[in-house]
Length: 261
DNA sequence: GCGACAG
DNA sequence: ATCTTGTCGC
Image (cartoon, rainbow, N blue to C red; front, side, top):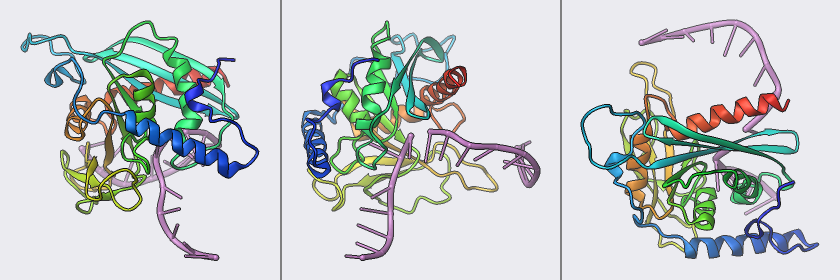
């Protein structure tokens, strides 16, 4: 089986509380090493969900990686789908054993190692990675997107379908497409001044009549600011609730899973 | 003790 | 995440 990186293996201890403390300490270290300001080479405006035949000969669109997983019993299928503009240029996957259960706030310890195994199969170097889960919107500001982003030192953003923690500036129900509001740190978020914007709720899609689609919760992973993270995700959407990188990864993970069932 | 909680 | 049929709407 693929070796699990030390970043995701806290020193073993018979006491579960001690193990948990070590994982939380590791996350605080990850948060301290994270950068939440724009620190990437590509031009944000060149990022898109579809190819643009003519116009804007600006700069080459960056390589954007979508990451997701599917599970079968005690195994995880981790995939990375890389696209440039609207074209998929590479898809890789890794099947690994999962030993850690899902615990809110500790997701990276369950999925991190398997995801790195998939990244190890990649032949290219993504300019940006989009994750299915939170980044800075996390109790210790070290969600999956931040943890992997820091580990690989790749610009990253987290896209979650549910809010883990933090408080929205406004109610999020029934909003129009394109709407967004800041998610601010509250007492549940450590290492952050209360009121600090740690992400956004983004209504990436909405129906005209029967509105009932919930918003996306976008947050910086690493080397991306809060506003830019949401701008990028918005640019990566193509008429669906989820941004294209994540949608493709989700679909590919399901395909691979079927072959292992 | 109770409630909340990404995938 | 996963287990699952039909069903409402564009």
